[in-house]
Length: 101
Length: 367
Image (cartoon, rainbow over the protein chains, first blue to last red):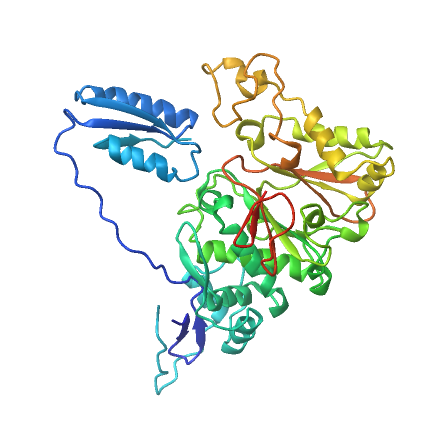
């Protein structure tokens, strides 16, 4: 791999960005209904995001989920830990979260 | 990744390469030094050869920082090959998980990574630790910080308004790199206190706001000088007040001499500053004027009740103390950090772990 290119003028230039080596991960299929699902509510611990999430979760309650499970991230900026991600996946069919400053 | 193309028989008009790099969006807004095969090769050699070796990946774009890409950015920034190992160490430190560069790059806060260099490399490459230390005028300080910024932009993808969501940013997002003035300091160098040898060269990184000047031309004792720094720290305006974390304090040599003349150590200074900042729970909760506040971004063990003192950072060791600046002038500086979302990191240029208490993984120590 080289970042080097030659322009039509013969001048040599270099791409400073570096390649992105990533594998595509597909989104989970969208649920057809929220009725009867196990709903996870993930609070990222921010003041305004938390307010938004409270209202969103209240609105979703009208769809009669089978359960509403609440979680809090240790840090709004850092990635959720593996243990929390595993619990979210195991205990829920749908998870909602909110970000907001 | 493009492959080399052959020049057409009718040679096209020569391109102004400085303008060409601007058109690609591969600059920090200032003209860059167009790399040549020779300058890139010299820089790769200074990194140990092997141009395709991936040193790290830079978030949030997660571009692969190969030695060649590192070299290209070093040349673009105007660095000399002698700076290359220091810049590499800084990038490795910044990309360690503790630092959470992803968050630092993307936040709406203004924080930028500040580098503070210790050890012999400072003098070997001619860094400025003296007058105007945070300012302009020194090639090593300026271009090392600039090279890091170019990689955060180019490889990390932190383009303003796109992946960098900072509301305001600050001037340190062009370059933000100083050296400790070990020669003018009455204390052991920062990295020695952290378990490294004096002849180790290290780079410390913290996500920080710009420096806030602390003036005190009157006090002839440690308490007086430090009370002025306490005053700068005791405000609810900065992130540490509401999001905890770590901060930096840079003591000017005259202030340091006054403090040390009474036998005060670095630890004494940190403890005094930590003990006497006087934010209260009422300050940081706005007296519950906007609703009942708990503030989950502050440590659990803080008392959340009227009148309770709220420390600026959880522990005196979260105040990272350096001596820097010119020999004349009774000034110091306070640099608030971003918050608990990031941990400062320290790394030796050769990747050797320090002997201090901080845990070190793959050569980078979490502070």
